Image (cartoon, rainbow, N blue to C red; front, side, top):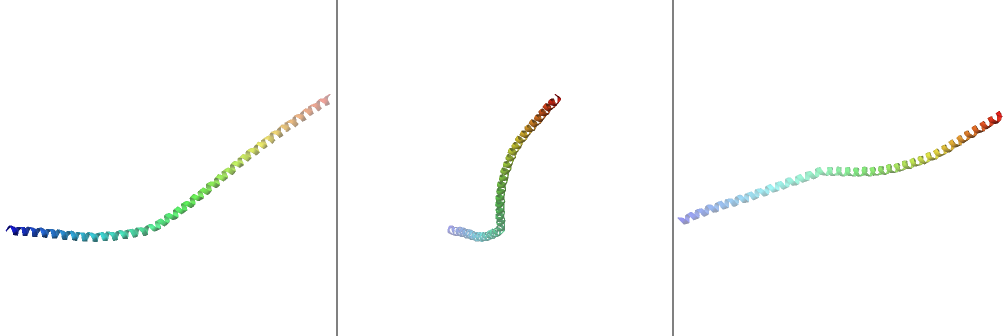
Length: 133
């Protein structure tokens, strides 16, 4: 009887092991099918994302080109403004020099006018004195 109980216990154990092994194989097959579906879904997602990103990347590239052109134009404009500022500075310096020359000439003319006025006044005074005498 002991042999029969061992046979029953071993049979039940073998049946449970076979059932567990079958369940594991079934689970692995189901998991591999789900992994395939997930891989296909991921591949489709990647394809859709790439299709959507391509126009965005092209637009970003155009925007960067436009920004580079604007930046170059700003650099050129800055150079032009710098040259204009230098030219304006030179004009101001020339006007200052011209103003100094005009001021000097004006002072010279004023002195000559005062000298002529004083000379005419002195001559008239002398003439009047001579005529009175």
